[in-house]
Amino acid sequence: MIRVLIAEDQHVIRSALVALLSLEDDLEVVAETGTGADVVSKALVFTPDIAVLDIDMPEVDGLTAAAELAVKLPACRALMLTGNGKPGHLRRALAAKVGGFVLKTAPPDELIAAIRKVAAGERVLDPSLAVTAWDLADDPLTPREKDVLRLAADGAEATDIAKELHLSAGTVRNNLTAIVAKLNARGRTDAVRIAREAGWI
Amino acid sequence: MIRVLIAEDQHVIRSALVALLSLEDDLEVVAETGTGADVVSKALVFTPDIAVLDIDMPEVDGLTAAAELAVKLPACRALMLTGNGKPGHLRRALAAKVGGFVLKTAPPDELIAAIRKVAAGERVLDPSLAVTAWDLADDPLTPREKDVLRLAADGAEATDIAKELHLSAGTVRNNLTAIVAKLNARGRTDAVRIAREAGWI
Image 1 (cartoon, chains in turn purple, brown):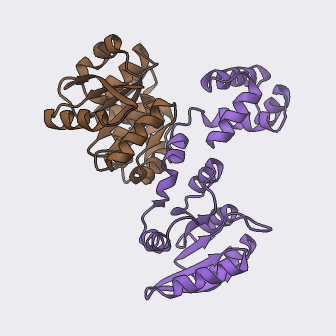
Image 2 (cartoon, chains in turn brown, yellow):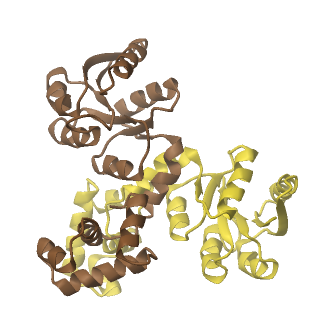
Image 3 (cartoon, one colour):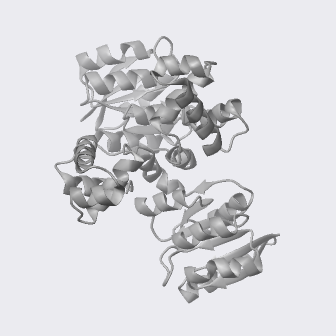
């Protein structure tokens, strides 16, 4: 028996998911919630094997909940179930070590198959996100360059970024020049746009 | 009209591909070859918009040809058409900046759609390779660590690796320790196996 927790803020959809999964002999929905804020506490009580998590939820989003879950209850694997596959969401899902990422547009059979696979330790990614995943894999930026670009994206000047990252202002300026060149960008703003669209920052 | 070059060593398959593509009003096969060694020279003569390349070919493989093509004739985009999607092949395809990667198991319509998309500047990845691409994106190794691990995989000792990469032996040993920890490996041999299977080296 695979024990399932469901987190989805839209009540009708959550109930429909519970009904759908309950039709399967090997799946048991042991907990449900409408916010990411409850995921870890409910998981600690009901010990699901897998948490099926929506991303856009009030208070705490599903990706934040997945990252917390990976730390607090690593035995429970996360499967993101979301309306869209933004590159940034896929990047955060990777970082949170989720077991799967399936779109709500997928046929129900695929969701159920994905739950079984992720519960068995496999990784599942919605086939329609193949190109998005490839773009993520193509990330040319170093971790340092990502940090610099994220701060630049928030509007910080080179001297502020340098202070924040304990670097010299010259190093930060060199990083920014390298980033613009690597991304074939017209300038910093364009580099931020390119990196955001590709999900690299 | 989209001008197509086809490189495929198995003659029957190559002829079948030419026949298939020639049925489309907007595709014209302008050149064909049975080895990767001829791809660039034929492309320079016949100026295709897109090169459809098999990977396993005699003399020069399709990925090497794609990498050369990207340097010598960047206007011609490459679409890999292969029997299997090994992670290492997908990694090399990424590095060669190919426009697409489609499996021979795909329906003909998908191949034709992929040719049109890649010729239009889009990127195409066979949906069945979504998880492989995700694994690639999850690569935890730095470029330095990859260099060290590749040399270790060839059987080099830390002192040899240090000489080759102009590093100190201590640095190389630290890199190897970090790699084993990052990959959760039992030792160097296990780290090489994990990184190879995931396509990271």
